[in-house]
Image (cartoon, rainbow, N blue to C red; front, side):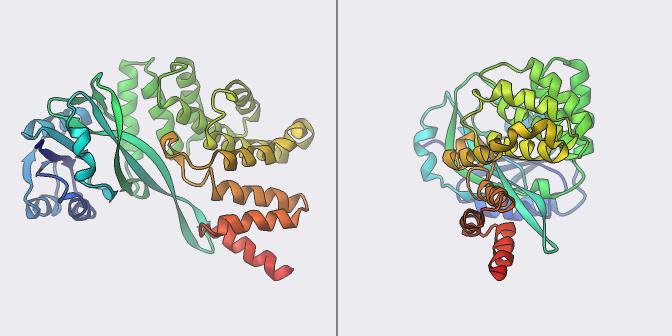
Length: 363
């Protein structure tokens, strides 16, 4: 029977490491943890779970640290996790068939939590879904100083493992990541993936004008097909263009990509926001897009939630329904607005629950 190890690099992770290890310990045969300079109880927590703990001198290079940690493992397969990732769904049994084949890479599904707003003084937590290559046969390594990628031509296969990731709820990593990314980009100025990641990092720091400059360069360099991050990069660029009120550029991108990205609910959701914001800013100039608002959100609901497409949870269901409800409400169609709000409220979406309550009290 093939053996499976958990392989991690950590630093000052006492907040979350025990939860991570507790959730996954029954799935793996061994645990290998490489510490990059913790000053808290991280190493003691790792040892309490029977982990083989090694030390690594940090070199501002995530791939090098990952590869060092992978070298410690003697198992047939390695599951690579971060300490702020927690198993939600999946088991060792569900991986048996996959691990019989050593010429493939496993992509786990990740539910990335983030703060999307505040309702009645309470933070609302949203979720994005992504797939990331983390189940590796022995001998496979990583490349890239940051946002490291698997260095292999093996096919990437989704595996039935879902993890929750709460790292985006923690502050302080954006500026660190940006510095490393820009150093790498200086060496590889035409690398579309690095340009994409710089744009993403700047957007996360709410430096949208700077982000747009990198997204524009990414758009010029990214292959028209085959690059899995192309769709996400374009949609993120649209949001930063909306923030900077560069509606003309955003609308030109939508026109170019409408047929290519038609199957993505996240694309149509961003379009709905774009059309609405543009019309609010200059009604006379953008009035032709008025009917497109309703069409965009209806298309989101028609597509639905497609986890393999990645993106923000709700763009194919309750968030699209809420925004459509808001559109019907301002258009004077209260019955349709209530129908949409009720649909979203069934998902316990706080903005719809609140709006529904207020409207029903008025009727």
